[in-house]
Each structure stands twice: as C-alpha cells, then as structure tokens.
Length: 476
Image (tube, rainbow, N blue to C red; front, side, top):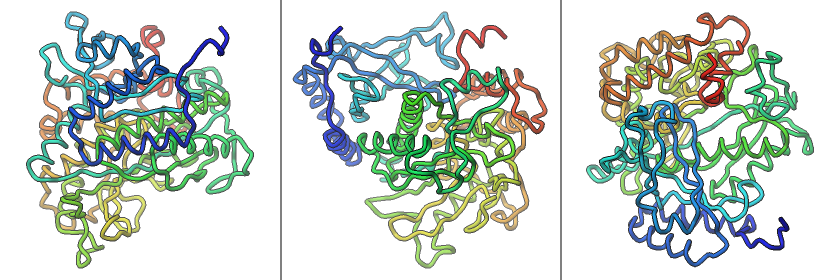
C-alpha cells in the first residue's frame, strides 16, 4: 500500500526528545497520576495520527513482552485490558490464566518512527490479578509499590543508574543460531575506546545513542568496551522504577537497531570464553528532599554511616541474592577472577574484583556501585533486591566484613541452593514467587551441562531466558 495514503505520526528526533523530557520531568516530580492520565487520554484522542499503543511488561525472569492495542479501543477500554497469563513463563497456570494490564500513564514514551514504526506510542503496564490487586509475580509492580511506600513513610527517593555492557555480533538472530556453529563472530576487534568512525560497531553505537537521546535518556558517554565487539552506552540516573524501565528500553533499542543493521546485540554475560564478559554495574543512592543521604564529607571514602550500613547488609546477603543478580547459567562464567570479575564479597574504593565499589563522588553524585550484576538479570528484581536488602537486611557480625575473603558462587546450582535456603529471599519475594523463580532457574540449568568447562555450550545459549522460544523449549 502506498505511504501516500497513510498519515501516521512520525516526529523528528528533536521533537521526540522534547516530549520525552517533559514526560520524564513530570514523572520525576511525582505529578498526580490522575492529572497525567487525563492529559494522556486527551492527547491520544486529539492526535489523530496515532494508530496504536505498545504496552510493555516483563515476566518473572525479566524478558520483555509487548502487546499492541488499537488506540481507539484502548481509549475506551484502558481499564479492562486482558491477556493470557498462562503463556508467560512464571506467570499463571492454564486453569487460572486471565490477567489484566493497567496503564502506567507516567511511563509514557514517544519512539522514533524509523525504529519502532510510525504512529505508535510505548507505555509500560502494571500486571493486575483477577481480583484487581497487583499480580504477585510482576516484579515491576513489587518494586513500584516498595518505592512508593518508602517515599510516603520516610520521604526516601531511591535513585539508580546502570552501566550496561553488551556485544555486537555478525548476522541476525546470532544467539538462536549459535548451536549451528558453536561460535559468535565479532564485527570489530578494535578494543577499549577504539573504533573507527565508519565501522559497524561505531555506527551501531552512534545510532543507538541517537535513539536513546530522542527518548529522553540524557546520555553521558558511549564507547567500545575492553572485549572485541563489546559496547557500553551510559546515561543519567533516575528514580528506581524509571531507571529499571530504561534498562528494558535500552536493551530493546540496542536489539532493534542491531537487527535493522543485519546484526545481533547480545546481553549474555559471557558469550565468548577467554575475553571479558558483560556486566550491568548498578549505581545506587537514596535521597530525601533532594539531599543525598549517602554523602558525608567526613565519612570513610566520603560515604555516610547510612551508606556503609547499606553496603554491609548487601555483603551479608550477597550469596542469598546472587541468583537474582546473576540469573542464568552463562552468568557464572563472568564471575571469573581472571577478567576483573566482581566475585569477592567485600567492598572497596579501588578493587574491581569487589562485589561493591565505592566510586569517587561529591554531594550530588555519591553512591555505591554494585558490580556483581549481569546484564541479563531482571532489572526490576535487581533494583528491588539491592534496595530492600540494603535498607532492611541484617548485617553479619563478621570482623572486617568489608574486606573479608568470601566469594560469590561460581555456578548456578550453588546460587540456587543459597537462594532456596535463605530466609531473607522468602521475605523478599514470598514463598510462592520464590519457588516459581527457583523452578525456572533450575529447569533451564538442567538443560545445560553441569560443568561449565572452558567453552560456551550451545544449551546455555539456546535455553537462556532471553533467547529461547516456546517451540524450541517444548522440543526438549
């Protein structure tokens, strides 16, 4: 059909950035959700060039799902959007499959038409159970509720920024085709900070950064990483739920841009043995009335007493929550000390092998950096477990806890065992969700060789939660 017959919304990147930054500021200032909803519905009604809304939600393992709703239908039925939860791994059983999606009107994004298609708006959804309550396995909803409760009771705002590494490989669907050749092909071997302006990796990074900028990410820096064909694109911090949403959008944008180039963006933690893996260093702080509660100019490393207590609780429960931060078989290849692996259960200002690093900071930027996080982890699970553990967890009475020689597990089976034995993870997730999550992790792990060995095995890629499809899963 001729494009001349269509009149769908397609804005310039500057226009997109202005709209997304305005929406981001409303969200940051916690504008009344009723007013935001009213304004969004009016905009959708008045803007005739919008054809559909893409509603995004994540399953228990963190895989992003998208449903397109016709705009006119959504305006009439936004309070009763149903979907089949039994088709989502970790959600409902077939006998009780109906779930609903509520629109999180504050989490509203205008995407570039050349990436997401013309005439579409992206918005995150809340998964709602049959009785109208937040669905227990929707970790985004769990994080959102926890953050809102802390703000109401203590005035705390939870802040986070993530440094997300990934690899760019030759060919579309390189992960799903990995079992055919047993290897990934680099598009670039230039190394850290080095890539010629016109090569595929630099073009990918530039294009992705442009899309992020248009979507209000407020970029900071981008560059090739240490390993061949590896990249990192950094952007500003945000309130915790918005920050986790941006992780999902970041990976979605990277994958779509790569696909458009005939390539694959991969967030497997260690897709290639023998080179540095990919991490998702998670920088966190807590503020109250705009004041950074982690800053103390007289504190050790200028981190406040509250900040150090937060760190101590994370170190105490590090093994308990390791499975939530490193959720795949492949993630445990990354926890290898030969490649600056953050597998030590201690804290340091300089040691990059420590689970928690204390970066140089000031009154505005002081934070703690949790380095033992893989980029394939559920970002809502990561944020929820880090913040709730740092705020509510217990601190072990171990002398020199911050420098003790203790380590994270080097395989997923030990991580599952630690997770299941922990009383703290039951408190975090509840018995039902905890059991569901562990079952998913063990089922995937059992499809892979138990010993990691020195090469990446086909099943640890094929049955990875971001890679598998239902057809492949059912063939096992």
